[in-house]
Length: 106
Image (cartoon, rainbow, N blue to C red; front, side):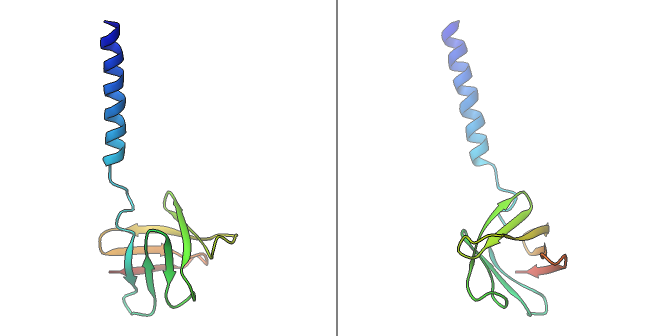
């Protein structure tokens, strides 16, 4: 009976780890090339870079906490903060640091 309990606990832990590893990220659609509908601004997002083509001369590093994107140029602080208001396969709405929402499409 003792061995059964140990095996059962290990199987349950393995299933929990597998389900966590296989779950989809809520921001899986975030990466890619985005542009505003009027074509004024372009946004390129990769695994490591956040690049507003019209605003910054070079890509910025970024990390995410919840629905907030924090960017910095070569690790310098303070971070620039963008809040994701809407995200799906074809639309992205970011709240810029000056509290202006900007809508992007693919």
